[in-house]
Image (cartoon, rainbow, N blue to C red; front, side):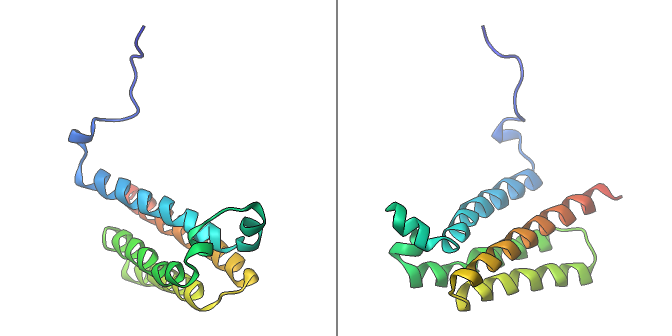
Length: 134
């Protein structure tokens, strides 16, 4: 017996906006996992885990701002919101990027992770609501 429902259109039928959304969410998920690794390096070491934050601490911190700024930039460029709101969202992404790069304490990483989640969820929500308003 086969299931008669699908989760969405086939990839060949995706619109430009759907491809941007899928790519953006993929990048967010990939780097959200890395962002989470920074806040619990000591716990991961105790568990014997080998995360990027443990194996390559300087390189992983140097790379972290790039996807955050790129994701913020892409979502803001594609957003239909006002210029001042776009500026606020870009500033949030910049703050998170700078925090990950410069604040290297466990408490700093925990706060950065919180701000990371708030800023990205704000970006996504603002962008989604802006598309609903004619």
